[in-house]
Image (tube, rainbow, N blue to C red; front, side, top):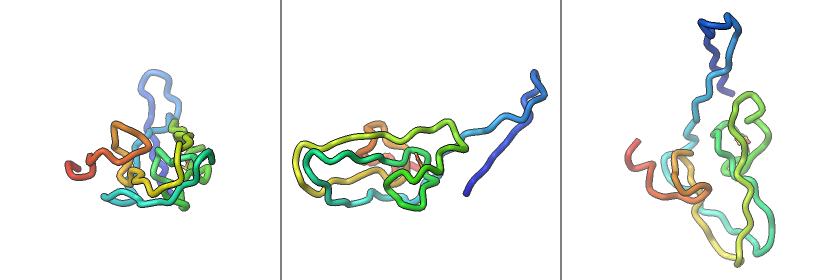
Amino acid sequence: MLYLYSLDKNTKNIKKMNKKKSPQLKPYSVDVEKGKKYAWCSCGLSLKQPYCDGSHSSTEFKPIVFTVKASETIYLCGCKHTKKSPFCDGSHKFL
Ligand code: FES
């Protein structure tokens, strides 16, 4: 698990830094079911990629909860830098 901290110069308090981790530089191909709720990991720390396992509690990131309109195969972002979360938009090609 990734923990990064810095000292805030103004308050002298320990402040968490939040930097995304990229579990992989390609999308996750997953089969999803119509109407079922999913929680995509946006921090990259989950051990159950691409889904949230609660590891974000040490960061300011939150999972992206979504449902789908049809049972099908979709491509969820693996690098965590997509601008169309939770779906892959090709951002991993530029990291
Ligand atoms: Fe990454 Fe929950 S573990 S958002």
